[in-house]
Amino acid sequence: MSQESARSPHRRSTGLWVLIVLILIPPVVIPLWVPLYDKTDPTLWGFPFFYWFQFLLILCSAILTVIAYLLSLVADRKDRGADR
Image (cartoon, rainbow, N blue to C red):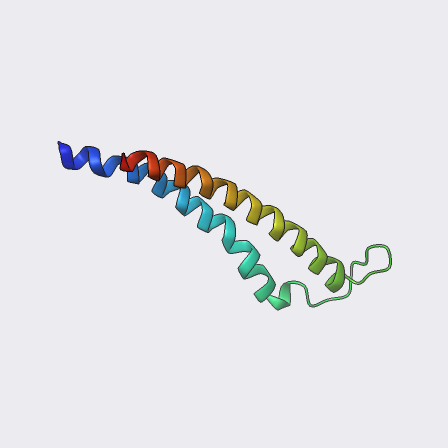
């Protein structure tokens, strides 16, 4: 019984860490997938797709990184609370 109670809090925060990894996968994988954005059409305000898509990736990557960071704070708080 004591082993189960010692392990169960870590299982709860493990799900958050998995979610954090899943959130951080797209900002890493999408820029490496060059055929996705290796084109000029459609243009946006005169900018070819290649350029404005790169700027969009920067913005989305920053937002996803902030979300992952905030979730890591929650997961870390749960882990520290489970150690007590």
